[in-house]
Image 1 (cartoon, rainbow, N blue to C red):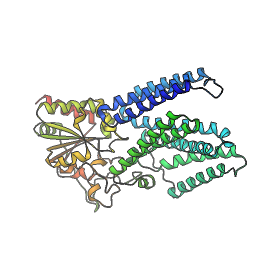
Image 2: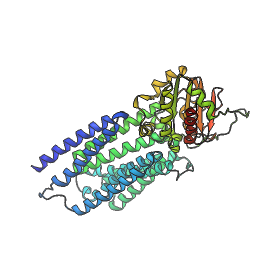
Image 3: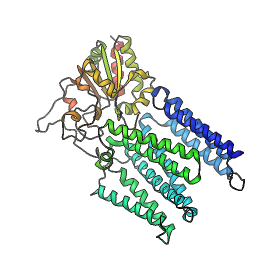
Image 4: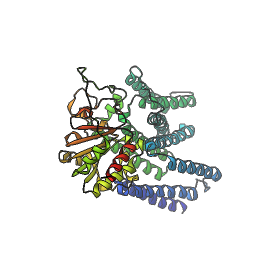
Length: 467
């Protein structure tokens, strides 16, 4: 009877997962969806601890250790989530992916012994769980180090694609040999498989540049879900299987959607190492001729925007770094009070993770209907009076449309150059995360406002108050 009740609670948990996932598709309902999915997971954990029975009728046991682990995890998670800045949210997501992968890897290491002499399907699942979980963990840790600035130098091993392919073939071959029991000392080779998976995860992510990090994070999230589903198959736990499939499927769909948003196949992201280096940010053209930029003052920009009819703001990672989202929202409200129509243009890969800008602006209580996706905002730029770009770079670079030699050529961008006036807020003339120069800086319609985004926008707010 307890098994019957356990399955009912699992069904309830899965329904909450699905409802939460659906609500995550829109910024207005995302917070509620996240809460529902969390409640579903809580129900599944409690039900498993209280209702699960072994074949002999006994419970899980070791409740003290389990409770201690849950308590420690809750405390660490709560404190970390409360203290993490919006700029570090991508790193946090990478850690989540990595920890999920690590759990699946440990399950594979623990269960391979009993599975070796069992059914082939179970043994296959254990080995797959070990490999996928391990490479997800090590790849996510490299992604974390890149995003956190601990791994600033580009590391491009000679013939890295060939090296990665050879390691992948070795992993598949070693797994096949283990499955066919062609190796005598299986325990030692399992640990070699574990080590090779760690290395492959590192080499898989390390050459991929910063411009592709949102795609990589989404892909690693998908792999963590697949690893969780495989762990669920090992234990015959339906809620783990379905939950893992939901994470894996949604992560895969998001990865594909982001690749389409960049007009690049996933294979090009993985094997192309785009953004791992590039041109420096010098202000010279291809013929060596120097190029100039126009600077504007906060006073001039405030007057220009205050007497405009329509303004589009383009947020980027620089906005998150400066923690300027709140003052930007205040600036938006002041312009609207003066009769200016204000919208935010959101590029699908702006920031360092999927939906980064949506989360950032939601924190500042920006109304969701003011966040306009790229496909919807692009037709409006020709009738826009002023575009204010704060911290965005590669997603507004006209080279994507005009320069066939550019590594971002063909990537859909926010076509801000069609607006009447363009204001760019940047600390310096440095390149963006893709490492390539932005021709928009030298456009005749562009004026630069140099400085920290928060200070610059605060100055703009002050100018408006004095009008």
